[in-house]
Image (tube, rainbow, N blue to C red):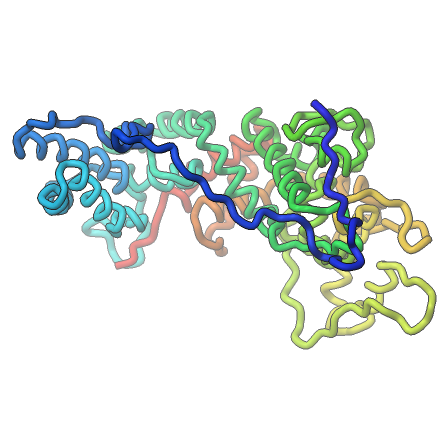
Length: 475
């Protein structure tokens, strides 16, 4: 593979300081098949049977009913009732009369996809449950909770069969299904959805570093940053490692673009590969990832506030309160000619009594990451002066730099793991947690400690927890 050169944003920068090449539009045509619609994999899955062209109407309807019943079972995530089937088959009849068998199936499928039974996860209170009383959800409802948690999709046939037979109530069967689902490629949605939400990777698309200050940053690097972090999380998931490895991993995943940005030699090509980090590398774990460092910065500079807030909220589970109204922005310019360091500028905010309480908590953690600039490059000097990366965490001892920050967080691993468990449980339930969930959260974290805080242990603990398996009557 040859070395690919990045776009030179310095070219013509004076006339067009913010313009970079971009694809205006893409048009795809063909392939053209004069014989009709091709047999794509999705069509093969839908048309489990196909009546002969000379088949009678009732023979075609029998095939259509079988197709619709199979699709409805997956879409509704439960056995299909006679009323369900009658309604959908009536739509098939309309389409069949207008354009034949395939049009009939298409019409029924449109009705199925517009049904509330497909669009919403409906959990119905069982008969005889008092209003406000807690009860265990049915096996079919548990199957839906499980599949949307681990796969962000509907249950497959095996999980539905287990639920229909009421076997998910057996803890051993449930655990076996969780392990099967985690080994399935569809579990990658835990990376692309959960990790992206927890770590704020989704916000990367909204970050626009100033091209005049950071001409090397482009969308290629942005997407590569995101993929590096996703691959680290995916490796912890697939290899069933401890979630603590997310902070301590002495390896990362890079392509040529990221490697050049980090200063790693000998990496060529667009594909990502796992590389071992040298001992003492500041890139170890999430705290050294360009994605995290960029998403917690502003367009023109780093932000100890955003970085400190991210650490408190996503690693320690102690988000600071919202800032008071009408707080003036940080002054980027000073009347004197002396270059002011970021630490000195942040000190100005702490002089304001309204700001001091929160900034004394957030700023020290964020300032410990000042050796990384706004796009995650390592630096030892800012404005001609050596960077002071001293910091501390609330209630903890002082430390220096990102390595000290990492050690300080891991002095109490149960706090970090408890935060991961909290984020996972929130994601699994699709709602914010309240005080009633606290005992379950503590139990999940304690149980995972006995298994080296493996990610699978946290997931199993969540699936077996009271908040995941129970519901309060809404009647």
